[in-house]
Length: 213
Length: 248
Image (cartoon, rainbow over all chains, first blue to last red):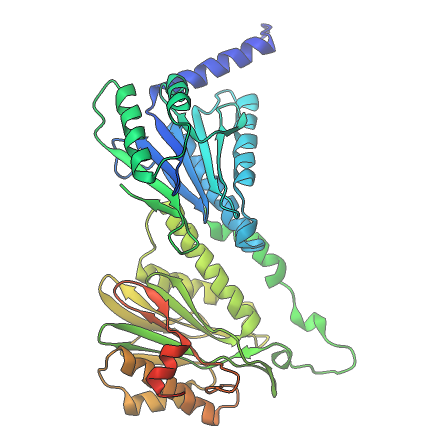
């Protein structure tokens, strides 16, 4: 039997360190608001295993860290959104709700499971009155409403500082894309082979999410 | 675990309602069919560069015309469309579920469900209504769309069997009339000819089937017409229909 006393502070510190390390090993994804909509740019060598995804009509998702774990969250989010949209109406599915779901799920896993999820995710939304929102959910379930841009995964702390300094005003989609690609390239030690780019934009129908590359 | 399984619990809550428990006390034999709106003729036919589907707008409750602006033909995604005949309430739910499930599949798998996949999935949805069939609440869909560059029309029976149709098909109470008309008049035609032919077949059906409406220019109610071509599925506007059939 395990009879050693470990203080709660220590447990949480250990878990947080473990999760952070796991996330740092991965590559970075940037989500930013633009004049045209929300832009996702991910350093992703695979063309089939995506890091960004559609959740619902006006809600997008970006994940970083362990693929299997954020994929799990992605699927849960889509299921929740579709269920809600089916029972009530399409307009009742909102980003805050999905963000809360992720926050609760990650918080629960962090506190109650032996191994926390090594992921962080962003829920992006263009609301009904065309406001753009970026919700960031950390590995411990911390939910924050980010400014106009946010990087997750890899060495995102330093990158976030840089983005906050240099991306203060929304640009056009193309300008923003080039800037974000530059950010990612400068940050990465290796040459980036493939950028996964997707957007959340009004193209006329009710589903805003679109993959660009 | 699929969306289907999650829905099952939800669906069960109302699918298992035994409608015979809901008899109106004063009359002994209430025919449930007369209490719920029934939707009617839908035709689909292939033309040289796509497939067209059209449905009339009437819903009846027994002898009473309950609604004259019901939509029975729906776009499912940008390569398929569905038409419904039968008990309206069940049919609308079938369409809603079908659309939700396909969108759900696409989002989870990052790829659209294939055309044969959709046909077989619709079969299972129709089959899941089995318990309602015995209460008289039948729903029969008609499904058409594009698979790569080929166009198809599929019809169903009440038990979920799916049938690939050669060139045209119709469902609903006026379907036999529409079918005879199409048998006599169908030939390889272009888009406008196809729209004209579907509208005429609906008109023919409405002449003898009381549950099918024709063209109501007075109220400006025209049949719903959807076109599926190589690019998209879109609704044909009222103006275009009027122009094609030569109405003012």
